[in-house]
Structure formats: structure tokens, C-alpha cells
Length: 128
Image 1 (cartoon, one colour):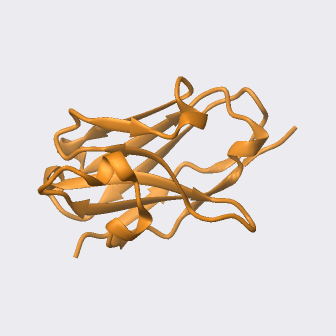
Image 2 (tube, one colour):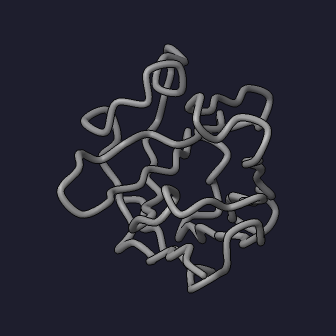
Image 3 (cartoon, rainbow, N blue to C red):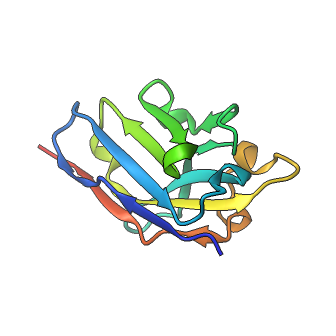
């Protein structure tokens, strides 16, 4: 089964940037759709962004559009989430998740239950 490891979280001031990385255990990572989710205390897990296996299709939740960019380097088995202009409301534990997606529906919905491989999460705290 695909194993994922997130890194890059931390404490940052509002308006600054962070880049999260999601390293995959498989060399055939291009067959997996990968998504970033986040969960703040007392809130449900929320889909933030998603990218298809080829990288040709992406999706973002409205609250991060124009600020976050998802990308992948399949040669390095890694998916990135570049987060700019961070806000206090972006504070959460960020998880990457993956699954095969032959019908190419998982990115459009970003439903956590559609992804069966999860990383351990990385904390992002935006505070002055």
C-alpha cells in the first residue's frame, strides 16, 4: 500500500509562506491522485487541494484559491503544497492522502473517504 510522509509544517507569521512536501513510498506515484486535507481543532477534515496522477488536473477549496499552489514531481515521488499569504484561519494539521483514481473523480469532490492512504500529518500554525 502507498505510504506517505508529510514535512514542511511549522509556525509562521500571517502573510508569510510555507511549502509542504508529501513524499510517497512508491516509484509509480504517477498512478495516484494526491490530495491535501487539513483539520483544525473542533472542525471536520477539509479538502484543501488535489492533483491528478499526471499533474494535469488540479482543484482547490475556495478559501485558498490564488494563495496555494499544488504541484508534483513524479521523478522525486513528491507532491508539494506551496502556501502563500497565510492567514490565521489556515492553522491546522495538514495531511496528504492518495488513491488510484481511474474514473478521475476524486479531485473534483475531495472527499476524505475516497482516499485510502494517509500520512501522519504536519502542523501548520499561522500566528503573530
